[in-house]
Amino acid sequence: MNADTLITDHAAPRRRSLYLLSGSFALFNSLRIVAYLPTLVAIQSSGHADQHSLFTWLTFLGANLTMALWLHEQNGGRINRAVAVNAFNALMCGAIAASIAWLRWMQPNSTLPTFF
Image 1 (tube, helix red, strand yellow):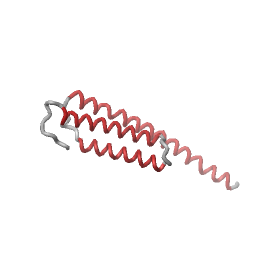
Image 2 (tube, helix red, strand yellow):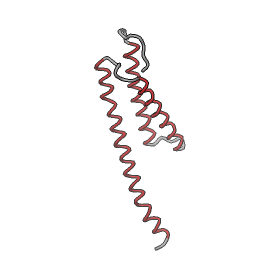
Image 3 (spheres, one colour):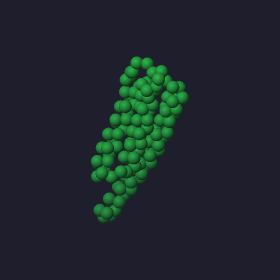
Image 4 (cartoon, helix red, strand yellow):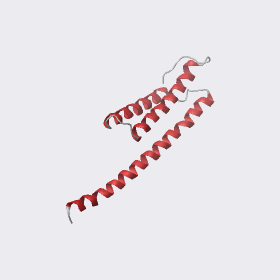
């Protein structure tokens, strides 16, 4: 047995593991993107944003956006699947935050502004 055979034997499980991890990442982040939709629908259909925390959604927006930017930098300025998924998650969190803010502050029947 030579060194190339040993390296190949150890690399195969790692490649399989990375493949499975990549697939899991894609699956669960796709589900997470879809999971934002019921929140958006609930906010818009009820016309009330009192039960949703604007601070929480802005925090999620910041976390996803900075993660996308960090991954972009770590990837040599290239956009890959991880960057795109985090950017889209940030977009969805921004849409929810904007919906909450709109219902709280911009509607004619809105009361005193609340941030949380």
